[in-house]
Structure formats: C-alpha cells, structure tokens
Image (cartoon, rainbow, N blue to C red; front, side, top):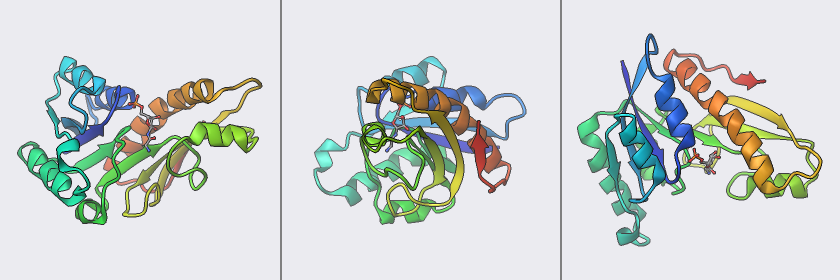
Length: 196
Ligand code: GAR
C-alpha cells in the first residue's frame, strides 16, 4: 500500500478529494496532511476525516528555506510517506528537498501548463483572451511548475468570466483530475490523462 502525504496551505478542497478517493481497492492511503499554515482549513478538514495532521509554520525560518525543509522532513518521518501530493501548497520547495523526492512528488497547478506558471493564472488567462483554461497534474522537479505532465483538464472560458468564476470552474475540474492522476500514477501509468 502506497502511503501518501498531502501538503496544503489553505482550504484543502483538493486534499479532501484525494483522501476520499483512497478507499476500497485503491492502491494508496493518506498517511498525513501537512501544512505550513497552522490555521489552514485543510488541517481541520483532514482531522474530521480521520487523517493525522502536522503543521510546520514557515515564518520562524525567515529566508532559511533549507532549515524549513529540514523541519518538514523531520515532521514527515514518523508517517513514513512513499509519495507527496502538493495540493494548494503555496511555498516553493528548493532543489534540496525536491531532489530527495524525485519521481515521488506530484503537484496540481491551476493552468494548462506550460502556460501561466506561478501565481494569478486565471487573471492572466482572461487578460490573454484565452477561450479555454484548465489545470495540470505533474511530477515535481526543481523548476517551478515544470516536470512531466501526468494529466490536464480543460474547461471553457465563458462570456463575463472573472478570475473568481473561472477559478471555480477550474477547481471543479481539479477535483476530478487529481484523484484520477494519483491513482494512475500509483498504478505505474505515466501517459498523460486528458479530461474531459
Ligand atoms: C487550487 O486551485 C490549486 O490548483 C492551487 O491552489 C488551489 C488550492 O485549493 N495551487 C496553486 O496555485 C499552486 N501553485 P484547495 O486548497 O481548495 O485545494
């Protein structure tokens, strides 16, 4: 059974969908939900689902990312994860951490990569006049929002969309895409999944 650690910074709606998916004959189970935000709503939701949680506040570490990541590693150790799923984890992880998890860390990003790495993806898609938007699940490499693509979900951009309305439509697709990609990844599938 593959043990999955899920990293969140906010509400954790993708985390909830991942946890809900890992039941029955699924080859993985959640072992811990970790956040850099002690007050993250995702921690509460994880506990409600019976998943252990741990918070590692990044702020005391200031600019010392290596020390923050050492604390992450120490906090994770008791849960013995095989795989990390970043699910709205809003801290950039350095090569020092990422390299240790190469091939064992996934991320979901709210754009059709390689378009719009980084932040404000929905506003940028609207400003560009894109007719479609979406989300991408990919393996994490030291380059931000890069790495082999495991799946993409497309949604239409609609007349009158704002960044918020578009984000909500993309998030609904994220909730379908990430659990599907996680399962396929754990089962050894590496060909990208394209939804819908
Ligand atoms: C999701 O839209 C996710 O794609 C995005 O944050 C949101 C988290 O929502 N992630 C990033 O922007 C990472 N760069 P959630 O907490 O409800 O899952």
